Image 1: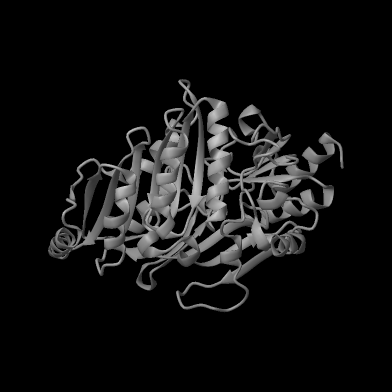
Image 2: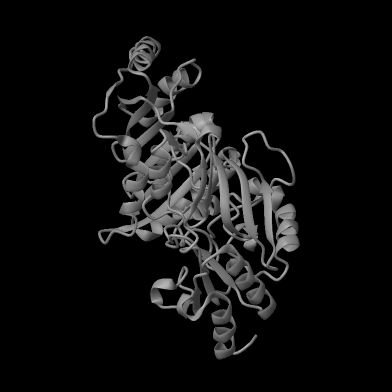
Length: 424
């Protein structure tokens, strides 16, 4: 590996001295301290930066807004952070074709404001839109309640450009919704935590903004009783956009079901009438305080000074989501409190708080329970991570294939080494 001075000279010649600086404590990644932060001004500079790092044996941590930089395992090495801060343009909004092409460093909030000018949106409700970038949400595959109606990011992205570790800029997909040419790099890169390549731009299909929206909430005495009304809604022909179950405090085990209707006022009114008939005797009432920020509120409570806490992301079969929450409420009794938000798709976020030993025990037991049922449990943040408890859990039978793809695209382990599933 070249010495620090030589590295700085080479990187400075690629991105410009004003776009390269020494990394500070605020640039550390899960406690691992890099040496440099490079901020390329375009995707060609970014690709050239990766090519140099790859040849020099430097480990690179891609970074967008940094809002989810503590997700995943700590990197094995971290020599340099490569930021997409300057890649923030909205390249083309083809509003008539319902597509938008945007650079990876653009924030979700900026993208939403631009699309709204033509009455459109990216039908995706990720965390921290004011900070989170397009590249970051693709790398982490973050998704919220709108996933139920509009699908995950893998269904919304139709084209991508990736900067590969060898300096290649690989493009796949196109600017029209019905495009099947080439390898499906967009889906491959989504959720790969930046271990295969760095997203430099993406093309999404967009949807019209709704004319109106109404949220209804049903209070349930115990979380176990939420299965019946939830199943009734799921099995119905109601045209809802989002459906979730909230568990504010496992000690009381009271739960709330939230449902979002979007469309015209007349259409929404008709949907509400059908819901009242369908879900009787359960009563859904309008919810003035929006409950759709509940997932973000759980993240905000992580790391509070009052007690030890850990944040988990679960993935379950939709039919197993409520039974899983019910089991969780009985595991810790009064020793561990669980607050949860679970989408009807089976994805959920859970905050455990209490004594550290008990929180770790419940997280371990609950992960085993989820995996036996065909689901998974991922630790968000570093509070739980140890040699015996990594971020991802059992990778399953897909690990050999995932390692083969990693070796094909990043044989030198340049990007985010050891941060992903199975130490990839």
